[in-house]
Structures are given as structure tokens and as C-alpha cells.
Amino acid sequence: MFDGENMKVLIASDIADDAVSLLQEHFVVDSAIGLDEVELARKVHDYDVLVVRSKPKVTKKILENASKLKIVARAGVGLDNIDLETCKKRGISVINSPTALSESVAELVFAMMLSFERNIVRSDNSMKEGSWIKKELKGRELFGKTIGIVGFGRIGSHIAMIANGFRMKVIGYDINWSEELGSKMQAEYASFEDLLRKSDYVTLHVPLIPQTRGMISKDELSMMKDSALLINTARGGVVDEKALYEALKSGTIRGACLDVFENEPPTGSPLLTLDSVLLTPHLGASTNEAQNRAGVIVAEKIIEELKR
Ligand code: NAD
Image (tube, rainbow, N blue to C red; front, side, top):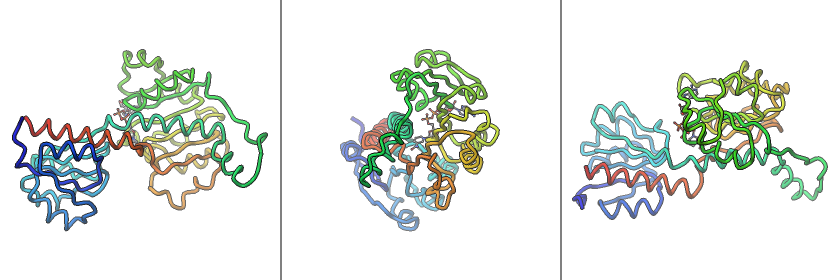
């Protein structure tokens, strides 16, 4: 057993109880949730590890006060709230838990597709309003349809596995396509254009980087079938929302399921006015299981790293 009893961990955002217990087995653990930048900067100087989620922001000011800090741990994926450059300059490791969320995001994609196709939200609302509009609520099956997965990484490949269970035809596009992974997941490679033209469902699972910003815009939407649905649980900026609104309004595509937006919340977005759009407020990773895994995985990584 390594000697971590003098090392101190500051938890600055709510993480799973199991993760806290694991850290307490090895370190002195304190919680300070909801601190602003000045308060956190004042507090952090005494700690070896700082644990956060998408909040609080870990700014230059905080890091410059953290003379003992060895690790910033993000329970989850995105590192946009952490000043990575300052961490690098100061020799502070940054760790996260990207594998924790794939199942939850993949399941949300199917929840949205099924909900859209079987009119679940409208069914529930109409029944609670006292209606029985069975004829109007006729839906569509996923069975036998083609799903096009853009970005065949952790989440994309998990989608393929679930889609096989629905007996869908699975095609995928990735700049680093792996034949081995594709064949394991019974997915066929397609060029980006082919995927857009052939898919009944186009689901996006690329990171938001300069090369993917606006990857789905007017031209790409016009290549899609007019019966197709677009599902975006990746990042808002991957889809040009103005072009999507126009495409939905004019019937270029049939509908969209959106979990992520250019601005969150998307206050005032015209997309909120369309019946052909199903919306969730960035719920992809919001499950008990994903959040538990995210916390436990970073706790394990902290222990592993400090043991070295
Ligand atoms: P991943 O890194 O495992 O997979 C991303 C894939 O995209 C990789 O295989 C990569 O090669 C591919 N890719 C990168 N640039 C590309 C391009 N220009 N064209 C085609 N393919 C490209 O990531 P993941 O864990 O599967 O997550 C995917 C994205 O999902 C994340 O980056 C994040 O933005 C988003 N996400 C959303 C939620 C949510 O709550 N909705 C939760 C977790 C992740």
C-alpha cells in the first residue's frame, strides 16, 4: 500500500458516493462545492488533487494558487472548463473518464428515435388532456431501416451494437475507420456522402473540433433522404442550426432529435417552435449509472497515478 495519508483531495463538485468512499480509503478528502473562483483559488493551495465535473471552471487564477496541485480530475468527458495550457505549464496532470458515458448516450439515441417514431410524447400529452387520438398517432418501425453513424468511436460503436438488436442495417463513417471494429459491430463503411444519401437515420458522434464544426449544414442536409431523421447527441456546433431549421421547415428532411445545442439552453431558437423536432436538455450522460462510473473511474485513476 502506498502512503497517501498525507495527500489531500479537494472535491469541488458533486461526485458519486462510491467515488468519495474510494478516495477516502487512500487520502484526506474534503468537499467544497459551489465555491466561486476567488474562494476556490484561496482554498486550493493546500491540496494535491482537485476533482470537478463540468463545473466549476478551473482557471489560471485558481491553478496559480495551487502550489501543491498534482492532478485536476474531471469526472466525465469534456475538459472545456479546465485551463489545460496552464496545467501543462505547471506540470499538473489532467485526467477524465470518457469511457463512463457511452452506454447512456447510446441509449438516449434509441430513446429519442423510438419516441419520435411512435409519437410517445404526443400520446402521453394527448391522453392526459383526455383525448384518444389513436389514428393520428400511427408510427414507424426501426426494423429493417438503415442507420448511418458518423464518428465510429466509443459511443458510435455502441449504437451499432444496439441497432443490430433492432435488425437495422448499420453503416458508419469515421476518419479513422477500423475494419476490425466495423466487422465486430456488423457495420459497413460508407463515405460521408454515401452515408447521408443512404441513411434513414443519421446519428452524430464526432467531437466538436474545427474540422467538425458545421459538418452538417445546408449541402449535407440536402443530400439526406426527405424521410430521414437527424439525431445529434454530440455537440451543438457540429450542426448548423440555421440550416437545420430551414431544412425542417421546407421538408428537406423529416425530423431531428437534438440533445445538444450551439447555445445551451437554446433560448429563443426557432427550432423550439417545430413539431418535427424532439428535444432533450443535454441529457446524454445524465443517468445514475454513468455519473457513478464517471466518479469511480477518476477515483481509480487518481489512486493509480499517485501510486506511481
Ligand atoms: P470517441 O473519441 O470515442 O469517438 C469519436 C470518433 O469521431 C472517433 O472515432 C474519431 O476518429 C471520429 N472523428 C473525429 N473527427 C472526425 C471527422 N472529422 N469525421 C469523421 N469522424 C471523426 O468519442 P465518444 O466517446 O464516442 O464521444 C463522441 C462525442 O459525443 C464527444 O466528443 C462528445 O462531444 C459527445 N458526448 C455527448 C454527451 C451528451 O451528454 N450528449 C456525452 C458524452 C459525449
